[in-house]
Length: 351
Image 1 (cartoon, one colour):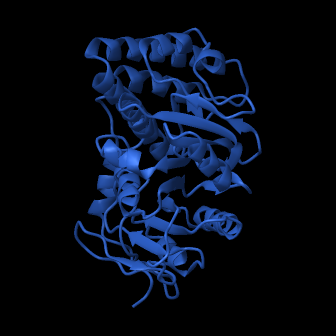
Image 2: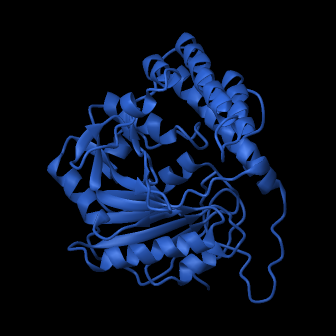
């Protein structure tokens, strides 16, 4: 049997992709979710291999392929660093897939990674040391860099009407962004593109909420952890390159809808309908200002910002990434050309 074999139905088929390490005491599990970005996935796995070789403790690598249909599952199964591939036959949301890996992980800690995240040297150890030194912390997030090397905001305050007001006044970078400074600091929440999680804490709050298909899922996770008495840390000594392949066209429109939808879900879940309404109007105002500025600034798209305005004001309208996944699942798998693997094993999805 190959390292990855697709199974139909709700339950994924899973098989180890490398040697059996069941007798080792695993300290940390790398948890990678991939949706159709095979080349970036392989770059990320190469970076994990480099990290893993220098660590003073035992690790394992789990890859969840989100029914990519581009040979990603097979490529992951053939990579020397991967211990297990979970290949879904139906596309699912990011929160469900991260939770799946957290449940399967055997390490005390689980490092959540996107397929477009590439760890820099020493990142794993820096995140691990941060949580070891802070037993009250459940999560530690890395400093993220864009593909061109520029800094990407990666830690923020929790969304509230006040934080939305800061955005409407164009003060969001000053008041809401918390990923700054050269030292580890407590923050409200960190992006899950490279997020080390204490597994006992994740289990305590029942992992990520699958109602969030993608976007705001890690915000809700951090908020529930905070409510349970845990903290989140931003660790600038841990660096990850985040390629962040943002889509344009129809899929880009769906991302905008999904982002607005889940922002509103978060506000209604943790605040109130009235607070959610206030945040909708303040956020829409902030995007409207950007749309006006984009008319004068080269390289900006006023229409895209205006699409954010409309989606923010009417988050229940339109089709998002959840609907895109449903359309994907309704289509039969394409027949792979000779020499290309068209199947997979298990479960995975970024949304």
